[in-house]
Amino acid sequence: MEHWVAPATPRGARGVVRFNVMLNKDGTVKSASLVKDPAQLVAAAQAALMRWRYRTTLLNGEPVEVITVVDVVIPPPAEMLRKGFTSR
Image (cartoon, rainbow, N blue to C red; front, side, top):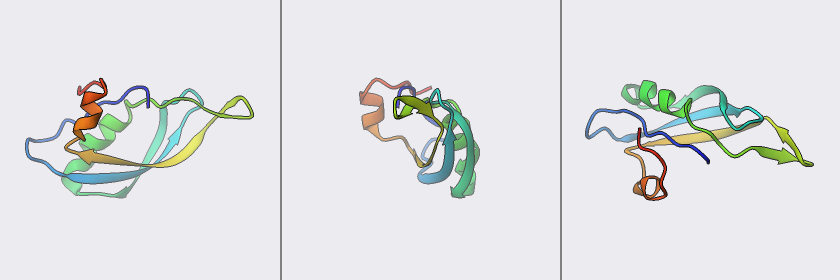
């Protein structure tokens, strides 16, 4: 992942929101459909996810769209913040 934004959630919120995600050839999120949710976290998780950017996936040297499953963990893992990703 090249760019990660933490979900803006109420203090003390906890949970995992799972999405099926389609990534564009450039690594941006094209679409996200909800798979599993704590209802109170869905909007914040999806808003953050739509701002994330992934490394481009190559197939035979050519960029391709990718479908994957993404878990948005709330609160975010401390390792994401330690790796220098933005928290806003």
